[in-house]
Image (cartoon, rainbow, N blue to C red):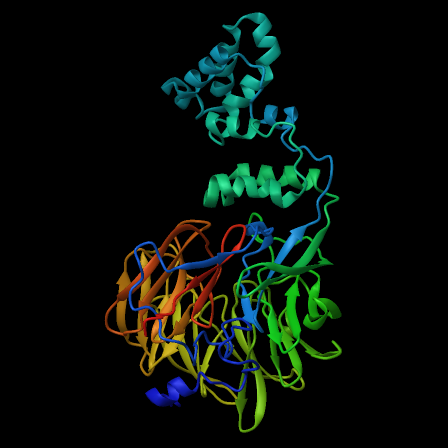
Length: 543
């Protein structure tokens, strides 16, 4: 039976027992209550200017890029904090050397008229036919080379053959772009990979050329060392106040995708999970390390409650918040992505966390917060299950749709399952007996609204969609970042009205980083740019 679903209670449930800081701050993943809902917000603009909301500040350049992860900022105690997984610079590495360019068929010294002949021969329909049979392709290349001046054929024969063989990987414009970096020192693997990601966006994730680029990076930067870095900015100005780096490890997902967890701030302590484990820093001493706990690289964001840090750095674990002493581990709950949430029932605390092990067999675990012993395990509807709790009702939105469960200390009872609005969208917003799911990967679906009681689809808005990140609800408005193709995101705001889509506005700036989530504090939204954090004013000061 569905529990705690009156509009009043659905709102009140957002004021969970997890809050550790004033509601005006955004001190952790999904805000002060871990559900994306802002309980106390100033009046916000009812309509944005076509140019977007006012920009208050943009920080000085920070070492950001997808290879550094796509963690989002948090705001607490007048400061903004963000995490990045970075490379330690190396001297003397020149990845775009003559041998690298020759591998793809480019030689700087090749005469332009000869280069033009090669490109024309590659575009000839006869070559398209010859490529279907390896022996015929080889014969076509030999016939072309035999017609050249013998001196040119000898000098450039290898480059010409390579250019024919790999013409489907790179255009001449691509090769000319790579040649522009010839013999330039590139100090980190991240800087090298970022050049390709910035140039080719999502396409660099696919095809054998990506594998070859990574192989080249592995060989050149095999001595590269990594670090987990925290940056502290002034909330009012965006000025960098301090930064700290700690030895990390190499870990990337996909082509190159660094750890992306968010820090958690509780009073004068900052907790985060990086590539080197779980950390506690002293903010009163500009990020001095208090303790470091064991853990694998992950995207998990810590939950801090009742003097304990819960995190999923490879497997769900608990640490004493003051000393870092490891309290327990639950090896059955394994995930590189999940962030735990706290559930309290009849005075007892439980931790709920997703698991993706064995691979593609997703589950949600409920464990005793004191001992880590499993209370129950439920098969999930997909990956990345960070649930939202509304009293004793659990809502999970992942690839494959959305589901609601009635939970007790003994089990999770499935109440309904919807196949609308799934496939790697951001976490749900539960507001006034409705579930708002923003975005759906690989579709134009921008918004799906479901009835919390029944799971029935109330609205499905298919326009300008794509994968979206965890949203924020403040002053009856939902703010989120929608991916518009790899790397580029759009900050969008709409009214939280269940039966129709009412857009407040969009930020047309093309450089909001996709896969990041906004932070909201004091009427302002904080977003991650490719090389900075930016702060926009959403408050309606006329009100």
